Length: 69
Image 1: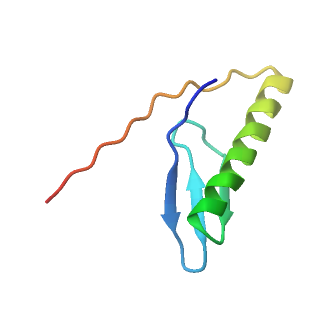
Image 2 (image 1 turned 90 degrees about the vertical axis):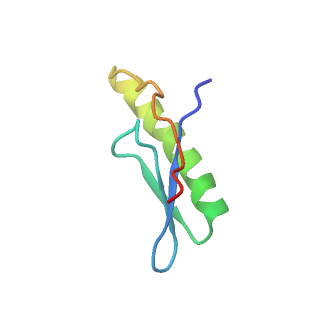
Image 3 (image 1 turned 180 degrees about the horizontal axis):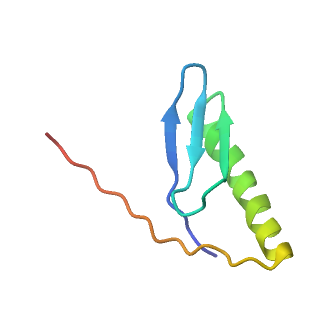
């Protein structure tokens, strides 16, 4: 099992989630929790599609840091 860093951003009317290590895989939701759940499902389906087509599965390499100014 791999763990991917995801970014959840507030949009005007909802939240959007994506993983920097998995281009093209995004999801939205009315709440942060729903966006995360939707992304989890989108990522599962995205990776299944890559496997089915014989493409390599991206390795999780992104990390996070916070900077205070």
